[in-house]
Length: 218
Image (cartoon, rainbow, N blue to C red; front, side):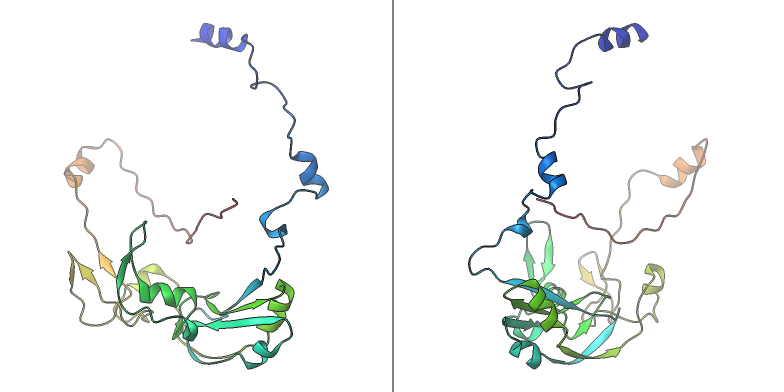
């Protein structure tokens, strides 16, 4: 094995072991590089989202009057401006989704379900105007107990986030009241109890992680 490795290292390569010049390096370090956000097309508007400061709250009212009248603002949108999504299931390529839930995630209504949940969107001549106008939007919240832990969220007395969700199991709704547990799935293969008994070493650990999502840079 050592002989094979030594022979490989003596070979000549076009890329491995070289220091190629980054053709975009100079543009990036000098600020000349152009990104998607740098492109300003004629008639292009910029948007800014007003987000909830609460992890769980009812939206009692939203007043967008001042924001709509702000110079340079073209539109202010809330959940009330979205077309009715109704309670229907749609296949969107990566799985089925309830369109009513999707609509309320795009712009919250009638509740915010997490801190940072989008409540209103402002479209303006530039992002600075949109930000200034968003600060003029007045939202009246009724804070509700938040759900901050997965295990506690599954308890019977936990605050319920979605009032129209009931637990589903084997394709049937088994819950009689709203629940944070949307679905129960069961997977089984082989005999795990026997495998544990016969294993020379069994290591058990519990891990916790925050919800993550990739950031697109295309």
